[in-house]
Image (cartoon, rainbow, N blue to C red; front, side, top):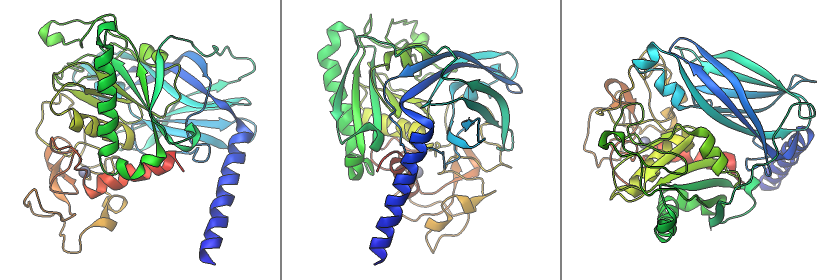
Length: 423
Ligand SMILES: [Zn+2]
């Protein structure tokens, strides 16, 4: 009887969720391109372009972000009723840059893109940002009228998109687009092999292997003018499809792209929830920002780890659990504030983190132990800091160069996110 009741409830929630979507949105995507500028103290949003995309890849049921991760949040309101009808939080390179010494002085200007379901009627889009206490505050709002505003028709390009792993309709699955960068026309066979490698490394790791039926993976075969990846410290400049580069924010192994427009234009033919940039280089490097994108070097001996680690940042908002690094971000985690990442804590508000998963024998803080121990505790040292920040487990893919070793807390965070996107 309980099972029948639960089934009835879940059918009711599904129908209710769908009708919410049908009430307010078309089965298409509105791509919002904007400039996010400012410095450590000030920030501004200014619209660049509104572009239609053919399909909506996200969930049609889970329209409101329930995770509360990230540095920024976009909230979409129906103007007639004032009701919140869509929200998504995210982080960006601007969020990291503004904490560097450069970002404390001068003014930076970054292109960003958010995808929202295509509104049927007039909507108000609000941009929110966290303050120094991690509290949300309003930055800007914009009215979008799909009848009157100029919205570009779907962009077309010749980039081939093909399924690497197909489990079902995009609206019911987590859709991961893997886009190639730094592969010239001579590298096509290598690109195909690397796509297969990325697909296998993603799907073979826990908990993705247990969720293969909830995930679609798409290969986006962007061809670059030249082969390889830009590496400024080696004076190597390569003309590539989405302009990925080492030494982002002056950190040698931080491999990202500032060319947001080229990245999203190259993804015009694919409906996706998450982006991975597959970089044609053997040098160790990568990067991942929550609901932004992740990258990984395709030809390194640790490529499998890089994919899983960086995707952990971009997909599930996982924080770094290591604490010795050359990362040039200063004061990233103020100790009087609970960080938003699900797998690190300052103990300011630990109840919201993994307290329910703590081993019954664990004391807070948990004394250092052998890296092979499987006691879920509160271990000091995480988020680039050896003191005052804590992680859940002796070791993890978010701490050490180890493939397929997410700790139980990271695993749970990834599982929750997979379930948000799929059914
Ligand atoms: Zn972990």
